[in-house]
Length: 197
Length: 197
Image 1 (cartoon, rainbow over the protein chains, first blue to last red):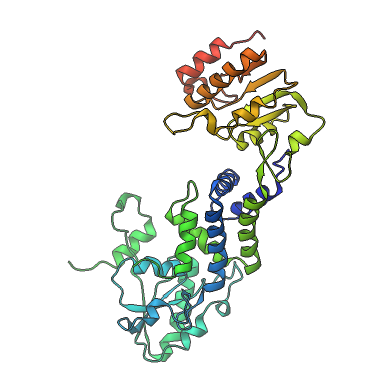
Image 2: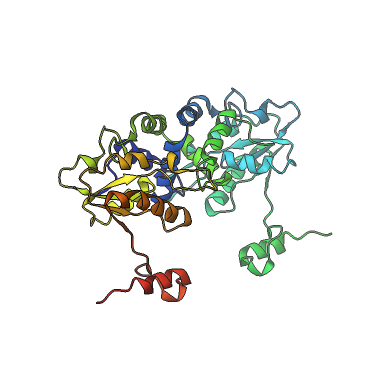
């Protein structure tokens, strides 16, 4: 016999759909929600609805925002001549955390993946091409995967004829890692990219 | 710089409050919700609200239900003279999954815990005492922890003067486990509880 409270099963199912959440965790979460104060549960539900209603893509860089322009594109201090192309809004978060990058972003919302049925048209590549006025450098910061690599190659081929400098994030050993556990490809790339100290 | 989309941060925060969910997982879940179709996100939010509005305690056994009586108490085929006392609605789910128990339940919604500030009055013990008419056996199926043990003792002392048989779940080695890894207390209990085969 499965649990027979329909509203509870429905809630468990919803949590089970989340990435990385199995049935047991979903159950714990659903019971946690049940144990919440009614006003807190209401806030949770509202947060889901609100996120969907308020958040959309920035008109310029396609990052997520509640306004017309995202906080980076709105910021006068950011260098609009440098555009860092990433796959995902989470990548923007990751790079912003370094506090080192002063340019702007462009979020592709995916990577070219023939296996996954994602072609260049499903990404925000035409939005990128439409904003190249005054841009001097495009940094390809797609993921170091087959798909990210292919996307970086594809876009750099579109940009080269336009005379825009296209760069790629450096490959190498991650800081704090153990050389012993680095894979051969990464080590080879790290060797190739070695710099004078 | 933390992420500057307020509605998104709010959603991440909500997921972060769930048991066993850290910041990274909460982020993944929030982005997953954003990627959902709007009607699916609406359904998720509704499931949370609905669970809170519809689910309450069964009038007899205090298990969770959408109706006046839970499905077990409503079921004519269940033996109303045997009451299995558990701490939590999840314990009911666990025992129901065995398909072996034909009696009814009583959900305490906790266990006596002086450290946690939970006394007998915060549990549904008076509801249990109020439904003993026609009950011949009460099985204490609280958790095999200090709190569960104390709760079982406390309730059994209330029931004994009333002439009701009170039993406790058997302790022993879990089926499929390795004796080598069983702790001493469990092994001692398993020895004590040995049965002729």
